[in-house]
Image (tube, rainbow, N blue to C red; front, side):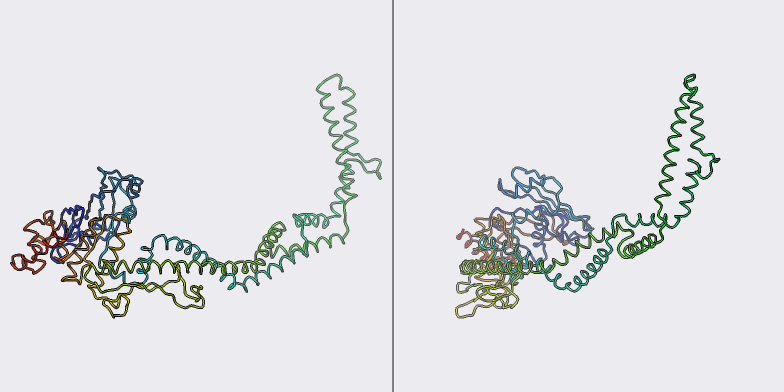
Length: 572
């Protein structure tokens, strides 16, 4: 990695060994910036406070070797990245204003792509992870991770059933809670539908009755006008001397028809006058029929107005016209059917809820069985690792239990509380020596013991994890003496199958590293390109002496440092 303008680091290059690399240096020299840099390359949160004061941006660049054909390679290629001789070039920039950019194989990518690759490339473990291991939820996650498919399978089914149960419970609660409101709504709908049904309106009936009422209200005037029009067109039988339009037009047609053979133009006019005569006859006949059919009965007018009043009462409540009223009635009937079906729906949901709870009981029992079986194997493996970490008499175990809850699900013949991950409460217990009762590690482990338990857990995981690189940030805190030597020896053993990077303050751990990097500041308080260097020979002995006694030139410290290196080489 190349690190520029990050924290106390001005410009430095960090070359990690394929095996075990130890990063050492005085407190405050910037060792943890190595961890921070790797975190940024792998999609970690970009904090502008990390940018060196006076710099515009912090930049971290890395070259990561990938195994061909792995999912990490496929994901990188999907993102448009190009490999450089089997290696992936990654870059992350964080500006002082907080903006962040990521590059993968020469292509700009979302930071989330780096985070996706991180899960398959590097497992980072630090002191915050130790604190996380104290939480029961984290301990359950660790156990599930170790158990693998034996838990993952039923857990996936359980999670699906649990999610559906929550949805059913919410809908059921809403239906039951709103029962009174729904009953009131249903009563109002029934009243309205009955009121409309009692009137039995027809589509467009209100417009037709309005026109009829207008006609009946002016029946005498309409009859008089029709009679006058008929007399003008067809004559008045009571007045033989009257002149009417039909007679006059007929006379004109006879006159023109008599001479039409002499001029085609006049013949055409004669034809048109004939058409007028026919039209006048038709209109006259219709006027006579209109007058005969005109109903001036006041009783009919009263009946029409009464009907219109009944329709108006509906339009005041349910729509602007009868068409809208009928549409309201159709929608209301559908809604009433829905409301009346709620009781059936409540029954259906209740049955589904009970069925899901029964299913969850079965799946929760499967999870409990799988976790209990995995817990025994996990605890045995971690206990064996603790023996290699100078805790030969310590015993680790898992307590897998449940809490009583009358509203819960049945597991093992008891009704217990349950959640999205099952009904189990998982807690990691430690008995540090024979005769000591197993206690939760949060209460029963010292700082040094917790560090070794944490390391033992990670070593056990390493046997099942495909992650090729492990980064430990001072997980050896609180440890010293023989225990520190054993931690170094165990990390060296882990490094035979994976790349291991350890930020440490313990010379006993650093001595076992294949490569030791020293991070040191210059006189102005910065770490420059030459401030991260590989220690070899005499330089490494001097650094281990400093770590042992704070004195690089102490003969006693030098002798001890050389002894540590000899021990590590002998183990290797």
